[in-house]
Image (cartoon, rainbow, N blue to C red; front, side, top):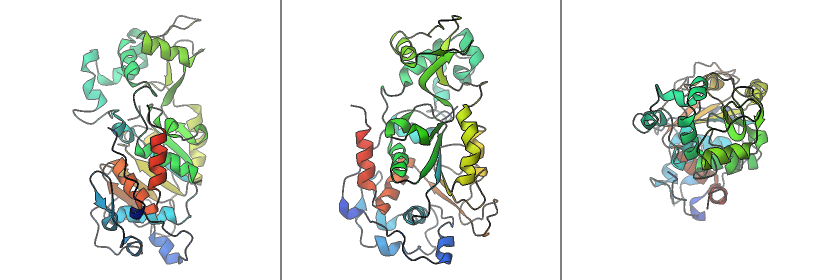
Length: 355
């Protein structure tokens, strides 16, 4: 299974910079774009971006951080995205990108979803998404689904809007999410560019005979009547088409993932522990010359930090990962401020918020 809405940034045009794109860059500069820079690495020489940010004021994020003093990791990503070099970006997200929408992640001790399911008297936390348990006792999932059903309480976060903005700018090849909250789609990401690895709530089917069941009727019965729908054919329990433990991932995932990782020219991973297979394998499936960026609270998977070369040998042997530690929304806000995308980001986010 896949994994508090932050205040809107003030629209301060003086705090944005339009980084020149398509400027003359040498091959050496291009290679340097992909060097890893962690949030703790501030001593290394900036890649010409200080010239662009020296006269800037502050950008309103929480906590407030002057653009001119932005971490080198964020500056490096901004330079890459401003270069017009990357037009087939693959994004991979987990539950961490939805926490600011008020949806808990799964595994954080104390606040994660699995730590707060005691009220359902489950034999083990994961049972709420277990197909066999649902057949015997669908009530815990029904209660949880009625609270989390997409489009009722939770609005897309700044990070979801950033992914939609990448698509608007013609830079997004595909976004793979482990989440079932559908916030990417609500943010404006097209279903064509979207892979919901663990399914979604838009459609439903019987857990016994697999016959389709009307998605809106499934929603009405679960949300309003607080019970599991019954199949019209075999009377088995119906559930939304989200992936339970014991079920395979959607065909669309298997059909596209191998081609997407082969075609990707940049990978951005955000808000995930990279613990659930097979989605956690995507960062290691991209080509060896594909730069990898991680916006996350902690280092995960095979990502490296502090100038350490990735174990993935690149063709140029100069490849580095870029890791920026922290809240995804804060990282994205700062990045978009450097790129001059902040107004577009905020407008996109505001337009997708629930009334």
